[in-house]
Amino acid sequence: MARLNDAVDCERLVRSAGSFELKFFCPDPFAYRKEGLRMKLECKGISKAYGKKLALSPLNLTFTEGVYGLLGPNGAGKTTLMHLLVGLLASDSGEILADGMEIGKLGAAYRSKLGFLPQEPGFYPGFTGEEILRYFAKLKGLRHPQKNIDTLLELVNLTDDHKKKVGQYSGGMKRRLGIAAALLGDPALLILDEPTAGLDPKERMRFRNIIGQIGFGKIVILATHIVSDVEYISDHCILLKEGHCIGADTADALKEKIRGKVWNTPSDEAEAERYVMEHACANLIKSDTTLMIRSVSDAPPFAHSVAAEPNLEDVYLYYFNQSGRDGEAP
Image (cartoon, rainbow, N blue to C red; front, side, top):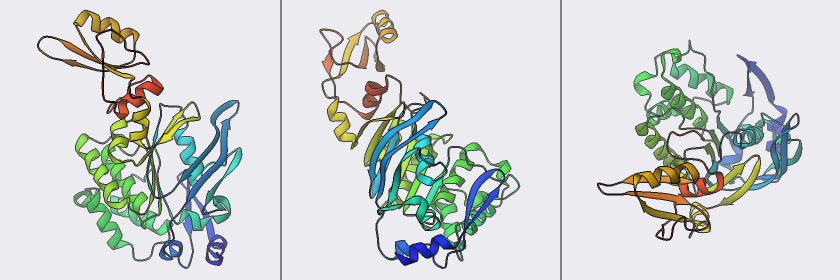
């Protein structure tokens, strides 16, 4: 582990535009991955409070190779957890270990394996898209990054706009640029906070394909309230509610847990309107002659209700009693 300790010794912190950034002067910041090792990330009893408000209760999670989707409404603790994982916040209790070593002690060696997309990435508006990526490549200590930059610009569909000032970018373009910045240097750990926020359906599909292309051999952790993103690309789901982990499993296993609690009920418009006001309704499907109410509850809402095959949106509705459909913020 000598090389990791050496990397810690060559760390320097820089602050720019009010955001916390890191610059590395390591002889080989990606040596750890070149040795063929796969990361294991462990959260052991970590908690965080802001004053008297508990943002995360003591949390125990283990991440290995795969794509993990963090699901939960606003205020559930998703962003706090991500900021703890990337080292922007210190936990009040517990520890975060990368391959058995505390991430704070690994310092630059840990961050050199990390790609992070914050919920609101801040870019210099006077820089071009390509200049932003060159800047982040320099902060990451990458040598000769142009080929990597060109590949990522193509991957996120910004090749034609790479000379345009970021101040002229749309919100979706800035989001795609942030994804490219997070992917610089082929990080072993990729942490993405609301990666598809502001993307149109076509861009979201492209993002899903990107994760499918680059996710092999990495730990990818993404937080979102858009359930379909998690269902399409995640191997594992973690449900957070008011700072507590209330479920952690595969999507199929979570769906199986609510089997027999999802119902289809034929109805007329008057009954449907009344039912939607009083119960957790997942969907309304209207035909020429009737309405079909899809809902979640422990018992059938009506005698003529029929059990339905659960999906991940039903899981979200069951645990959070809120919509998790595309584009609908909880």
